[in-house]
Length: 212
Image (cartoon, rainbow, N blue to C red; front, side, top):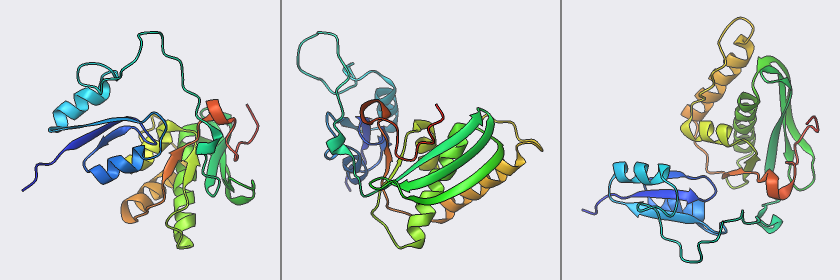
């Protein structure tokens, strides 16, 4: 019986720890400057993931010791046939709304009006799940979803939001929507890639509300 391995992805579509090569490959294949490595135990993988790439437990990288500069991520990496989501807010916490658009054309595919009190990351989480449900209803299993929130991307991956927003009468509307989104993730499957929109390199995401 083959021994299980744990794969650490430091640089990829979604950095993290994966339990199969197929999952790891999906995060690093075609990703410029991908950094990843396999480990025999989960403990070693977790230690390596939280260490800095280039340390003893991380992949070795050849080259000079000159200060590193951020590598430009070309717009050629953008998958234009995709859905992009973003949040519009007034305060954080504050009033939140979100929408999803066709990344290529900017056409609004869906939107949700103002939610009384929530956070940007909560709105992003709802928007990503809404996009996944939207695509599932159309039997679309391949179109990617872009979000510029790493936190929301992690929550979706975990199928659980980890917001510190207090649950109260004022925030109940948002929390009920969050409960529903979590339940959808826990009771549905999807294969659409969920990708990080690289704002620093590509500019504002196509669903941006322009309120910054």
